[in-house]
Length: 490
Ligand SMILES: Cc1cc2nc3c(=O)[nH]c(=O)nc-3n(C[C@H](O)[C@H](O)[C@H](O)COP(=O)(O)OP(=O)(O)OC[C@H]3O[C@@H](n4cnc5c(N)ncnc54)[C@H](O)[C@@H]3O)c2cc1C
Image (cartoon, rainbow, N blue to C red; front, side, top):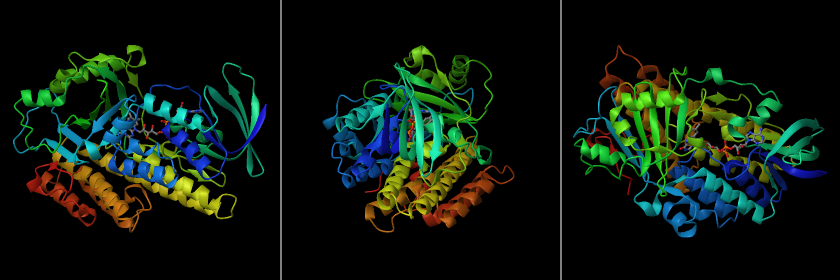
């Protein structure tokens, strides 16, 4: 058997399958291969206003009307109630001291809540990736897109300006070849092209160091229950703090919790100490013991993923030094992964995908394709570096919460700035979180230079970071009168 396609896409996560759907809309013939089959467990669930703006714009621009309702919690529930989803009103952060229960304060100095919506009608979502990715694959098959599961590429050869690819699909296991004009690597951490083309790996240039222990659970007690039982009052909270990407932060790491309507909670610890000291289960129990208020949430919890075993990763960070060539490109997660802090992954993937499809649409078979892809690479590199710098700065601030809050405002300021520019339709950002703006890059470096300094007071560090953010801060972030509580702007 052999076949000829325009674009071979490696990986059928949401990035790869959407890439195939969009390639078809611009008149190219794609084919997707994935080593696994759907439905399958996958992390990376929480979305953001930027991610959903881009999802909506892709649905409109490329006439995929069924895709548009997924950009919003209420429309998702109305159109696809069978697919599990979580309501995400914003981002919540709570700071914990080791060995002590969380003590709510009336000034909210150990909390940060940033709303990303006015209510469920314009709220973001958590995607249960098993459901969502499987649904996208089914939609792709409905329009006759070939998606080959349980399929591996065993050989890749450049033949002139095209690729000859040998693949093996289970259970037949008979090798066959295809010919492709372009390859999109949507294999995420699988790193297909990185290995096949021996691409340069620049992970050592990254400042963030973390690994994760994670799983899906049932019966995780809402944080708001534990918080109010400890005397906390939620009257100032701009949204229910569990309807969020909820972050528990502490010296050395943080935990995320994402709640789905089915009762599943996706939860994981990200830890800056890269060396495991015990099995994932023992480390998990120790962390719940060390942070007793988090432990109280998990007292009756049941782990339901991965046959009842926690998943432990190695170092999460990866940066590939070249993200595109004349007839190939990596999607953002194949080019770099930093950490789940602030949920940047899905928005970055969608923005990278939009940019790549525009390039293919405008320059397919034109001499402009290679320079446009070189620019795609440069932008992606700047984005990965910026996410790394913001996240690394936040990790440095975990010990001293006001510093972490100040640094995290770089994420919120640039996300809001990008959102405003996108919504206005003017001065459109050309990179995720405006990462290619030199003044912004310099401001982040300025903040990084002070955030960890123990010889400078926290007040002075926070003031210096806020001064660095000021030119990009369109939402009064950092105003002490807000007391770390940010409703969504009217
Ligand atoms: C711990 C953690 C938590 C995260 N949480 C969030 C979050 O809450 N919000 C957010 O926005 N982002 C999050 N992310 C990032 C998020 O996971 C990614 O943005 C997202 O998964 C990218 O989707 P994708 O389709 O590009 O790749 P993936 O989802 O990684 O899919 C890759 C696909 O490629 C296939 N594949 C891999 N190798 C090969 C190969 N050699 N041949 C064939 N197929 C292959 C795999 O089977 C898989 O189906 C998180 C990341 C981590 C590590």
